[in-house]
Length: 217
Figure 1 (tube, rainbow, N blue to C red):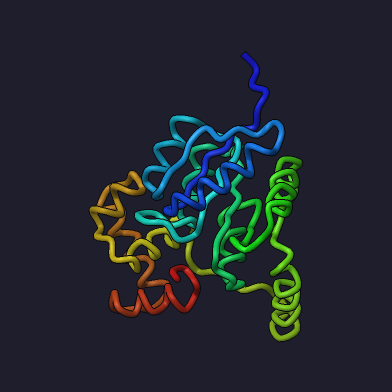
Figure 2: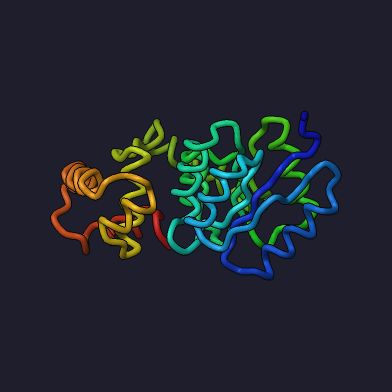
């Protein structure tokens, strides 16, 4: 049977915020909320089971953050779109979100009308960034090109960035393995390569690097 609705899953650890987003979505014809999650692990289970068209999620979530979740969502469901809604205004988060494959980036202070505009834009295959940060992003890129000529190259792979963030949040290798559905040995190998690439010798310095680069808030 052909689906007629555009199916969304919501993920945020604040119930009231999820309820507000659900209400906004219910007012937009053709959209249907098929699941809600309060943490990253619960979200992964829903994505595997429901295969939604879009996931709307926060950057800061327990167990698995929004950037890492975006990587995993697109690995599990390549045709899905991700819209991030967060309170964090740092430009680094916008860069990380789009590098992970997100199609949209909004702030929690944005209006319901802009949310609807973002969803419709993403449905047509266009990326969307909050108007509140659009000029800041343009200025940031302009300044960087002026001084460097090219965009910075991140030495870490997507998987390594995910593992770095999870390490910085205090997760053990076993916990990271369970979250990402890989073996603890694989986590240890990634950790070794991360420290080699960054020339970092301790977990404390790994955490400092993750904070400086905006991988964790």
